[in-house]
Figure 1 (cartoon, one colour):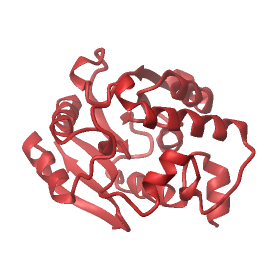
Figure 2: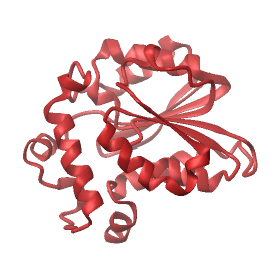
Figure 3: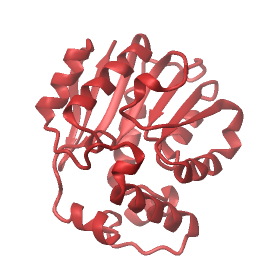
Figure 4: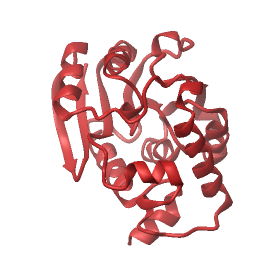
Length: 231
C-alpha cells in the first residue's frame, strides 16, 4: 500500500498522504458544490491542491512556494486546473509583503513552520488570520521535532521518508534535487533559520495569540501533528 501511495503522489510519503486525506475530511462543513477558496502555503508539488480541487469542483486556489523551480513543477502537476489556480513565488515569512491575493475560506500549510523562527511563525499565523474569511479554517500539518535520520536526509539526499523506495521518475528526482538546494542554501531564499524545533505548545500558543478560536491538535502521529484553528 505504501508503495502505491508513493508512486501515485510523487513527492509524498504515506504519512503525508494520511494527513492530506484527514485535512480534506475536516472540511466536511463545506458542500461539494460550494465555491471555496484555498490558500496553500508551501504548496510543494501541488498534490494537496489537486486533491482539494477534485473534491470541490467549483473551488479555486492560490499556491505559494519559495522557489521558481518548485513552482514550475507545481504548475505542471496542476496544468488541467490552470483556470482555477493562481501562483505566488515568495518567502513564507514575508506574508505581509505578498501581492494582494484576496480572502480565503481555507488555508493549508504542510511542513512549513520548521523553516522559520518562532518570531516569524507568529507573523505568519497572524498574516493567515487576516487573509481568512469569517469562520475560515487554518489547517497546518507540522513536524514538531527532528526525527531520527531527518538531518541526514537533507544533508546527504538519501530518501528516508519514502520507505526506501527507489524511483526513476525524472519529475520526482528533479523535485528532490531542487528541494535539497533549498535546504542547503536557505538564507539565499529568505529563510532565517532551518528546521526550528517548534513544540506543540508553541504552535498552539501562536494560534491563540493570532486570534484563532477553537484551536486544537486534531491529529498526532509519530512526530507529526495537525492543528486546526477557526477565525
